[in-house]
Picture 1 (spheres, rainbow, N blue to C red):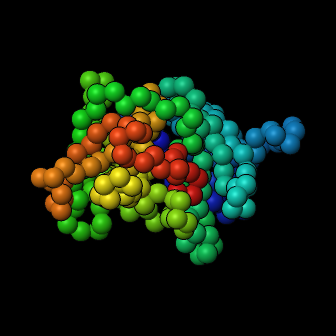
Picture 2: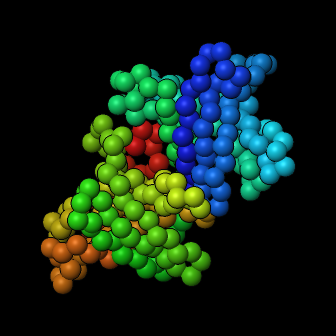
Length: 242
């Protein structure tokens, strides 16, 4: 569960990019400093931060990359702040690219690990404004409050309709998943398909309405069951531009 922002610096600056990374446990200022490449696949940047003692330390590396399907440039980063290495990407929305902005958003890399839903409880409630939802999902190991925010990065039909966000200790939004509006082929009823990134892997759940809830603002979150009339979306994962 990581998020953040990066801003490209002026060509004369010591750091090529400056920004922040956030999780539910920390908020850390970072810099990307150009480094000498030893080979084509060597990192383009060192990721540095200042520790509690005021010492600058190297916490990771980053590469300049280009999207295979979009052709858009992005940054691939591997970072370790003492909790084990994690991978994120820094990307630009279509609006940011068209505006020739120097701002990037840090989002999780696609996860290949799927967590079995098991016993899950949760609820999703439509908000009165901004086309957003508030909700929670919980089991015996975790209890997560989150928001569904309309996905401003959506430029294709396959991209998620919503970003799932939680807050860091300082209140910065952290993207932890994606959500799609869907319709059951069996019943014709609308539901919300959610993919939430947890420390144990990606959790698939659906938010559905029973007969009493239908037409209201409240949805019940249930484990994803592929054979129970809820169709698995092909748009899974935390896609780079979603």
